[in-house]
Amino acid sequence: MRGEQSSAYMSSSSSSCFSHFWSSALRSKPLSPSSETSVRTNSGEGLVRRLSLFDLLLLGIGASIGAGIFVVTGTVAKDAGPGVTISFIIAGACCVLNALCYAELASRFPAVVGGAYLYTYSAFNELTAFLVFAQLMLDYHIGAASIARSLASYIVSLLELIPLFKDNIPNWFGHGHEVLGALSINILAPILLVLLTIVLCRGVGESSILNSFMTVTKVVIVLFVIIVGAFKVDVSNWTPFAPNGAKAILTGATVVFFAYVGFDAVANSAEESKRPQRDLPLGIIGSLLICVVLYIGVCLVITGMVPYQFLGEDAPLVEAFTSKGLKYVSVLISIGAVAGLTTTLLVGLYVQSRLYLGLGRDGLLPEIFAKVHPTRHTPVHSQVWVGIVAIVLAGLLNVHVLSHILSVGSLTGYSVVSACVVTLRWMDKPASQVSTRWISQRAEGIIFLLTIACCGFAAGVFYRFGASFVFMILATVIAICCAAALYLRQIYADPPGFSCPGVPILPAISIFLNIFLFAQLHYEAWVRFIILSIITIGIYAFYGQYHADPVSSNVTIMYHKAPPE
Image (tube, rainbow, N blue to C red):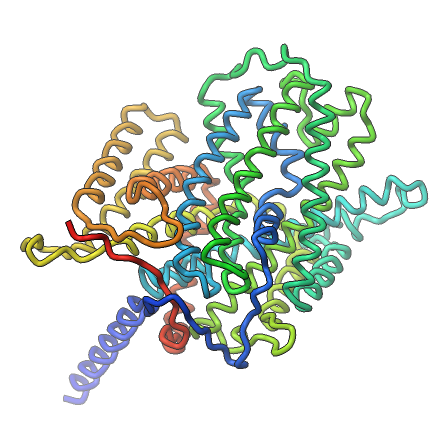
């Protein structure tokens, strides 16, 4: 009898735990349909609105353009030829779709930090938001450490131009010294991270000044390179324009897509923007368009100066100018690379701390992450934690070998944000239009969105492994049917402020393309996605579900109902 009672108790307890987990996981952040909101923090102080539209534009440019503009343009051109310009245009167009989705949500959530995590929490549920945060954060942590090591290496290379330092700087100081295989000692990278962390802790004003100075320096150097290089262009080098066909151009687009990643950083500055509802959309889209123009300019110059087949692998732009007798430009390019990496690293650290701040406020992470300094108005504890993680990774590990598992978080975040635009626009149908159905209107819409994502992944896999185009066309047709169903079977609200055009078709295209690119990543990136998701669910099950309090920091969502027909 006791055994039966014990078994019944354990079964009841297990059912209760699962029920609590499921009810917690499906919670969403309450939305307050008003134009003002007040964010409560544990310290009683919030962030300060100091960033202008110009600051936001430089923030987005600083996050997107690093040293890659001087390298990736040439390396992709070796395969795509002069058609690399089209690769950047295609990739830029795909990113513009994502930017439009981010811009609408940034306009509708103008008062609170959180970016993709916040949008997901409000549009879907708590667990999905936590999963998005984890995928983004791993990208940010590894990316920051990798950028710090690259920045250290570039600085050492500049110092070695001085005769006093040439061949006198040990590898362990800046380039990295391998120890016991997995370990790689680097002293300069942690020092740089400490300095940038101090700047970020001092206040958003100080960090904005540094970012603005370095970003302007970088853009001026890129423009100088484009203008000087334009006088050395031989238009005959642009023929043939696509020597390896359209597939090489499309493959190049999947590679260079990640050169634009970073514009979403602007969305995480919502709580520090002076006029967020107006400036955030302009900052997101404007910074991306500026990056597109700069990348295209560099592509045209580098492929016009040197025949594509003679471009170098490691420093194609430097070699192109050297071949034309312009060695001094290589020094400028190195300075531009240092400025670019500095801004990318600075903005990356900034965004991470704001995401931790958002989760700390919601209780998904310990309370200490929610604290804001009463006079500096910065999340010092979150910022220091982010700095410590980057310092450990950059100082002890050769994180460059992990680069092939990056970009998972960005593509995941972009896809979910596009889906958020669709779900937050949904309105309940009038009673006269509701028919008896076995599934709710919202659940039906989510199934269509998931099907579009699956079709994007299937099409990407078929393309990657050279399957018949019939299978790609089939996956695309199914996705088109789902997008059409979303358009015909749902009613959409009309948001004020910035409105993403073509909802739900444009976000559906964005989801399809993002997941298509996800399928092009290294298979280890897929494994990383699955393993990190499992670990994240475990952390949520043991900590997050018991401490989360989505009501503690309600967010404002702004919308207008569609006019009655």
